[in-house]
Image (cartoon, rainbow, N blue to C red; front, side, top):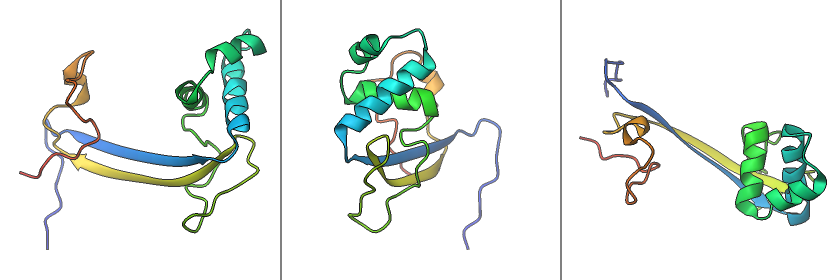
Length: 129
């Protein structure tokens, strides 16, 4: 039986998270992101929100900024493999979530300062050693 680790001073604990969604209605997706942008900043006009939310990345960040996750009100997945949820106001179908705990990553993110090395993958699990 493996011994479960106990916390020790200096231990780095990382939680790696993956959340997938499938875009089922691109227009609803963009509209939901623009609405989220305006909810966060009511002084922004519809026209300005359209300028600010122009692509997938803009839309994703707007929804995450507003709700803390991309499909804030949805289940972790749509159900059976290949099934999608249609008709959601955000145009997205939640498609699964996974989290894992990684202990003792050699360098915590904070220690990289403002710039991580280009070759560094912050989601890779370090080799056990």
